[in-house]
Length: 193
Image 1 (cartoon, rainbow, N blue to C red):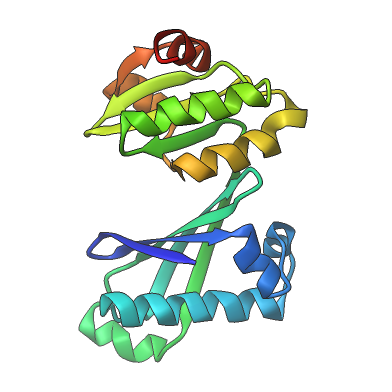
Image 2: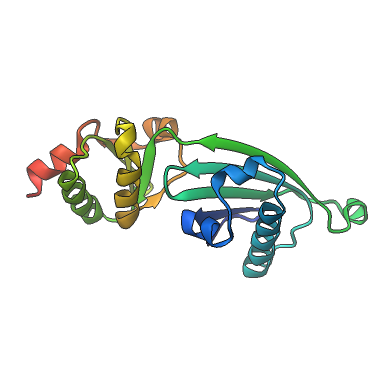
C-alpha cells in the first residue's frame, strides 16, 4: 500500500493486487457488503491519518479507480467539518463510493530513459503502439489499443518502469504536449536501438 497526499484534505492510496490478496480480498469485493473490505478501509484511513496528521472524521468521499492487473487507486477526500457539526458525527464516517474501470493503460514516468527501456521490453512480447505525452516535467504513455489478451502482460511490464496514472487521457490531450501521437514503441525502437 502506497500513500500520497495530494492536497490538504485529499489523499491518494495505491493498493496492489498483492495487498488485496494478502488480506483475502479481490477488487470485486468492493461491490459486496464485506466486513474484510470495511476493515481494510478503516485500516487505510487510520494509517493515512497517522502518516499525514489528518483528523479523518465526518463525511469522506472515496473515488476508486480499478487498474488493469495491478490493483486499485483510492482518492479519499475529507470534507471540512464545522465545529458545531463535529459532535453530530462522533467518529462516524459516511462513505460515497464511485467506481470506474480503466479501458486504457496510462502510466507516468519520470525519465525518458525509462520509456526507452520499456519500449525494448514491450517489443520482446510483441506489444506495440501507444501515445507519448509530456506534462509538468513527467512523461505519460497511453496504451489504448492493446489487445485484451495482452492487457495484463502489458500492465505488468509497464509497472516495472513507471507508475499507473489517474489522469484522464482527455486531460493529457488538452493540457499535455503530444510527443509521439501513435506507435510510440515502434518509434522509440527506431531511434534508440
